[in-house]
Length: 502
Image (cartoon, rainbow, N blue to C red):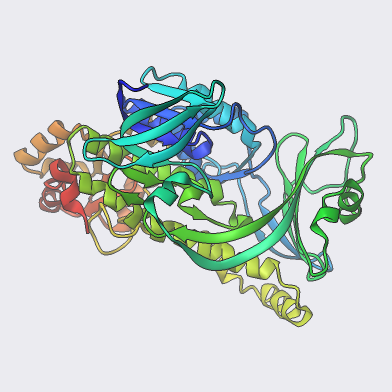
């Protein structure tokens, strides 16, 4: 380990670290993944991801494997009041959504991590060391230095990497090395998370969809996960004894109206404090943060792991561009500037959602119920925020938002055609009207050029009132153009990616 300078060292081998390792492996970079634990944590944790995240797994070449261990959220999420009345349904669907798949998916985290780790084994330049703890990390002029202890043998060594990404969780060593403070967005509420497995041959009168029990006497969330797995998240109330709450007799009393100990067995019961925090300073020199090391969100939107996967998608192509010498190191500064406002929008909505679910004041609950019944749930629109300042050009949406993934006429989804490169999609007349210099730039940069012959693509361009769109490797829209001249202007920025910082 002392002799090699890796392109990237990843600390932590959870979903964020494993996804980043897959994406970097596909790009041909040399990667070392260091993980303290010997094996995948065997109990449930995250249980939901959205369509954009499935699209990232597709980019990593693992969509079919992930689909095999997950299920689409067909029936959506129901918000019920204390009387059991349904106030709102946030619909889910198995139909092909904007990302070429269902909009929501449920899964068992150990199974997902196994798929991601199996995927990493495809890449000979990606190495993994479990039971290796990083005890110190230090930035340097040519490389960062990591002090590593092999927990199996006690042997210590150093490792060199041109960049280090801390996917090492809420207590991140890399964040401590950066000295990045955490901004508190206002929610710190303890909840009991209670996972069960239905026993073979036992039936239970449980919904096949997620339910938010907005009961001021005891707010709860119920989730139909996958297979025979079910989850309750139960808010702690004043006077609760945390030690008593996790005892089996208490757990069964809390869910007695739905389930008994004869019907299911307890898989896990633990108390979490749901936080809403975001780091200030995701990058310093050769050190970067991703996932829970950079931000933590309450689970009311099911976006904690999703945010971490979006981090990996944003960061991977930028690391590759810098390491290959196609972009200045300053490109990496756009990682936080783009992602921080984006994840902030999701955290803010999750906090607002939590405020409604966690209402314990009876009058406030009555007012909430009346508002729902009047059809005024405006805060429940799923966020589609633009990226913060970074690698894009244009003042209005859809620029800096993710491009949809339509089904093409040949039966393939768009990303299967575009691969891992920048791409231009447009009307043939606009593409024909660009200069010879632009065509040369596209060829030099490996830009995929796709005429908009497919109906769904044509419809999108018409709806947006544009003739062409330039996409980044993470499928966020770099810019749009109505003419060949405008496309020339946007494309001229491609050879010097860092010059496009706004």
